[in-house]
Length: 259
Image (cartoon, rainbow, N blue to C red):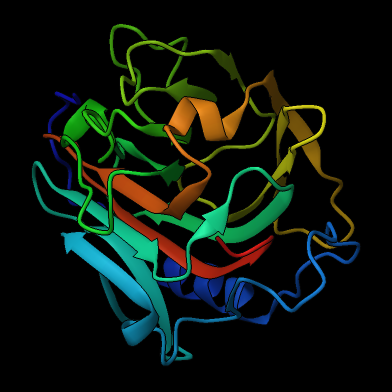
């Protein structure tokens, strides 16, 4: 869990400008085609999303930025918070899928502890530990992709991605350090699962026009076996400790097969 002192540094102009950039940037083309229907999850913003997401702990949908856009905020800048949000539409983990989401982690300096994208079979009320638990510690029937912004003792550094099986963020199946900061500037992430190859790949890119994606981590894992079933909830968790942050998801889509 994080243990740094909280500093109330609020960069109002920068926050507004970055939020505006998130709201106006379009998603990349070439989405992974999994399934014959439309997106399983499709939130260009979170307007009207309240009835389609199960939210727990500190997670909520609220208005942020000059454009008054609704975002999914996993932690609100308080001490020792944990939040989770799950799509009500379950996903079939025996099939390939792709998920893309826009993220902005901000507010205090240093910021902690980070967020995670999860598939899990424990249910729509699943919520794990705060701080270094990143909201998913203890969700045992899960596979997490964490975006970690604070270096706890098991971590390689304070700006890394990792794949975690079994709800224990102290044990990484694989980890990698992106070339961009995960904290203080918005970024886009893309998680791709190839069910035939049992391959999970995670990409990130900044919000600069023409910026290429970077493959940060890649792991061989059977998601259905690791999560304890093929019918799973998909969503996000986040956590703070004594160092804080506001952890926002601005848009989210999942192309995959319904369970």
